[in-house]
Length: 174
Length: 346
Image (cartoon, rainbow over all chains, first blue to last red; front, side, top):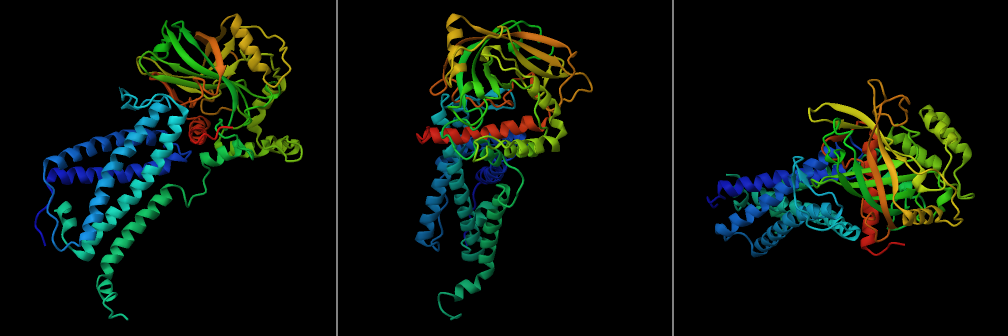
């Protein structure tokens, strides 16, 4: 079993993103068709959290580009390695696309995102019903894809940690 | 079989697989629960289903489907500035895009037969903030909570045979809900005028104004017409729209934006209860409508007149109907925008 591990920086960004993404998807699913009194607070949190995920993902791509990726143990089957690589790349794409679609759809609806009630984010898309329809639908579909990929990623990591035991899960924990 | 090369390693690792399967299934169930899969509480989607009725008019608002866009400016007079820090209440001009509409889900309904008329406005404040308000001719509602509103929608649903709501069912609904009395009293005395420009439009729900020192004042507001009522000479289904275009060709249509200040005991969180007539009224300025255009392709088409889109210096009351309006409007917008994107507007 390999003793290499991811750097603390990489681990911190990974687990922060994980906590945020899991919470934001849950918050989104719970608030979108709800009359609950906490709906508006949830929307505010959801928008602020989405911006944080976007920032963390950009940071992650930068960290990734600067540090060489860790070697994959020879014992890992080639198919599994390929599946993991594809999952990771798609995860990055969606971690950018989901918050961007959310941000853009607010511009299309004419309700620019304001963080902490003061900082207005620029609008990515001008006011348009058709653009809002496209972006709102995309935000929902992309989030569903992200949730499925996150579940696949978790299944893969747990499979590594508890079934095949190649030490890949340990790299993110140790 | 259990010793076969395929199954033996799986059985040896069953605990590992149980962990993988258990965690993933548990997360899946948790998200399904969060999405409301196992819950039967009332949702915005259910309310909008009842509002749109049996015939869906794709691409149109699920309520107040028929209307037209207007544009103009709000001329603040500065009198409300001591109650709210929102900068449109200082002495300045704030442009807006708005919409006159009639109630119901039919985008081609006859204007003069509608029981409800509305004026919605989206103010574009100098600092980039928006204030959206959707006002109705009725100053109060027949209900004070969302579950009862959902019942009211069922009572208002047209009978297949007559195309009109059942009088008996409506009467039974109102009998069961005494909070509807003030609304019914208003309805009995209401005389429709010949124009969108000569109705008074009310905020219905209450809001809070916040001044520079942070103290709050509960208010309702109304757009009070400056023009005097007149006959509508148009006989067709678009009589109100035709009249408005003609009127605007002759000059702007003006309303006084009047705020009513609540006293300590007034029902701030209950839109079915009127406030006493003697409450202090403050004119905040003049709403000056300068032009109108068709809603499809018009500047108001995209706007969801969500009453919770408020600038700093204004905040919502705890009225549950106010918060429910925001959630239901969002669902209506999602539906019609998706249909518009798919080119299904009809």
